[in-house]
Structures are given as C-alpha cells and as structure tokens.
Length: 121
Image (cartoon, rainbow, N blue to C red; front, side, top):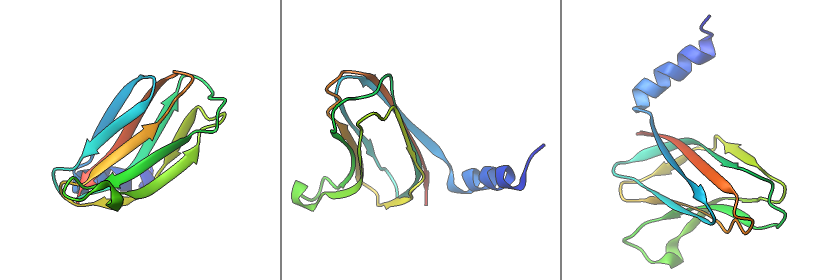
C-alpha cells in the first residue's frame, strides 16, 4: 500500500531530479560533492563501522573555488564520540560551482560511508 507520504516523496524526487552522491573508505573522511548546477541538498547520511572514542567533529562545509577559504561556511557540525550513524534532512541550497565538503579525522580508522540526496533546483 502506498501512503500519501510515499506518493509525495516520489513526486518530489521526480520534480527535483533527485540524485545521490556516495563515497566510502577507511581512515580520515575528506570528500567533496561538486555542484554542476544550482541544487538543493535534501538529506545526508554518515555510517561508521564502530564507535569513535574521541570527541572529534564531523563537519560539512560550503566552499566555492572562486573564493578563498576565509569565505568557507560551516553548515553542519557534530561530535562523533560514540556515534556510529548520523542522518539529517536539513536542506542546503547551493549554487553552481559550490562544493559541499565533508570532513572527519576518524582517528580510530573505522570504515565509513556517506550518502547525500540532492536535486536540481
């Protein structure tokens, strides 16, 4: 049975031209989603294979290569102490050529994966 919520999600994904960016690895997280058109980030998920003991921060930063790092904008930050998964559906609007940069030191060296759901605006 399709609920109204699921039907609305399908309609929204068609209208937005929903896309998914994925990256994974082990060790430090240092990856970037490069926008090729004006876009809206709908959600992102981070998963780790274990619980970090330290209190290092996972950060999401907005960058534009035409501007220096002094113009970077911190969009999201979360302490990863004892966190194995993280999900947010905070929306971010990004211009063409903006970069969404994900960073976490991951000193315990756990495997990780990131998924970002976004669509053209």
